[in-house]
Figure 1 (cartoon, one colour):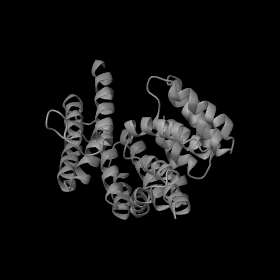
Figure 2 (spheres, rainbow, N blue to C red):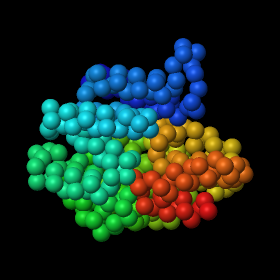
Figure 3 (cartoon, rainbow, N blue to C red):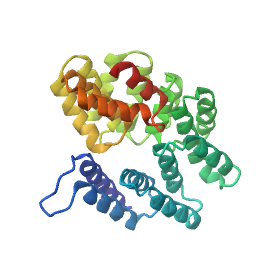
Figure 4 (cartoon, rainbow, N blue to C red):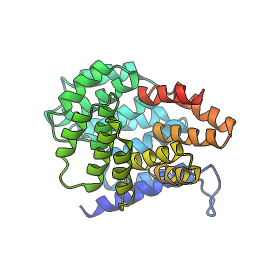
Length: 295
């Protein structure tokens, strides 16, 4: 549809605004206000868009309006029971607010109630929640059930396989991607990374970085690689590009903290470290990396 490109652009613009430091723009609005308006513009065209709803969840929770956005999501689910986007946003809300046990119970109960078309997104949500809890056994169970369906969210699914370096799972996932070169190369980078082949991983991610719409994961991975090579300038450049796409991804926060650490800015490191370690919705792998690298 013609408006899909508009929605993608508005979400990109919203992410860039959300990543800005709090300041007053020339028109008197704050960046967060502009971000919210861009997201609402997306939802006027597609009320169940999962990316837009998840972005809205982040903004609402950070501004103390969590109950309001949850009420809105429940209403959208009621009116659109076969739409998958609202369920993704509900999972995001429960992760961000640390309601992991409640979320697991909620989505487990849904498996017996939702139409077959919605079950893949429920399995994806459960796999993501179990990854946040560090429960690899249940993560694998729902990851394997999800693999019986066409890809739902290839980037997230790849990250779930990367939680325990399951390269074969990422390979099978990549074989199902036939019309998205950027995603395919991102997944190939993950495969190489899972196998410990960082040289090839870097080449795949670099290819992604030159595409019109690169994935934040590839850009963040390149930032980490440059950081490991003590090139702060390049690391910051790639991080800024990743942050413009996914300002609130915990993996991006971790990279930012490591860059601040190299720049000897301990107060900024400490602030991000505490946020990561206390964030229950953060993947267990990322939280452990924060604990190991930032003490």
